[in-house]
Length: 112
Length: 115
Image (cartoon, rainbow over all chains, first blue to last red; front, top):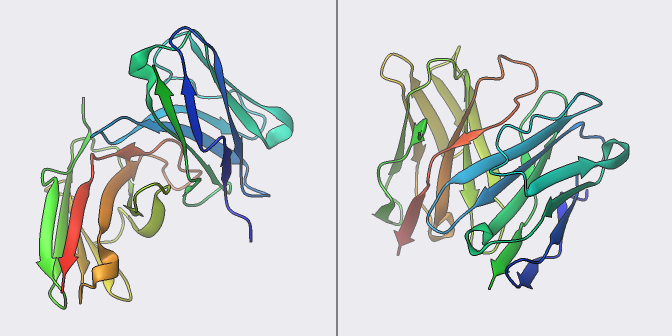
């Protein structure tokens, strides 16, 4: 079956521009997560959506970062006024109500 | 503050031998632990997990051991194969058996299995 998909796979942008990253979770998975991995680092939690509950935004590094999940399925992570330190691989994962998280291939973001 | 630590950034093992990857954690609220494998330019792939009510879980060549008193877990791969060469991430959750919520990840260990 289809796994988690993310788009674009690569994004190069200029400092100060806004970017949108998209995640399509596995069908039927109620939970969706965003993480990012900077060079040489582990995965850093950003935000978590579970069904219709309010999202856990505790990992968002600044108010330039926001995310939405429409209709309990697709999610968009938006970074406004990008900075060079935002360069990282942004990973999306989904899971059923109870279960392991399954990751997409990631979006490689480079801010020049 | 790194709550999950993988202190060995790399490990090199000969094919057929055992690979042992280690992970330590600091948060006593963690009750579920996972190992992920990651190849370059791909997302992490789930490998094996263990609940805090167990001290061992085995799946084929992969076994995870949990020592709660030491806040330590390890992943054993026997026998190691060249295709196992990847970065291995340890992760933990305080999900308490319901949806796991956020995972806390270590920085990963690069395993290289040479022929």
